[in-house]
Length: 135
Image (tube, rainbow, N blue to C red; front, side, top):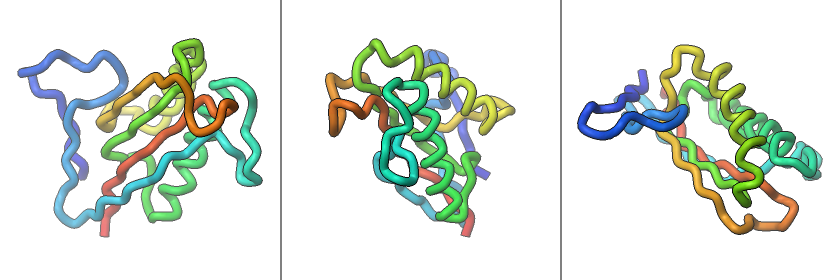
């Protein structure tokens, strides 16, 4: 079982994440490269951050399945958003998705940056992740 926790020696998290996550023995660490809001045919899911974030997390879930894992195996999530104007759409999808993936509130470690731009001007969100997959 992945151990996630927030020690009392630092401020409580300001969002849906844990400060620490530990990969237990008997698990392999799987690293997932940056995923954007592209559909399986390579086209973007939409021109807004909400549609792209939905597709981005669907891609992440597909990759986890390909590795024999589920969202509950996520140890670390690193998200990038191209501009503060896209945070509202991004955060609404994160809240819905993480509430579904982690109904007990046992969130993975998580970081978020807001960048001026990502790989292409039409890409608004990207996510990288690490998962602890049982052997």
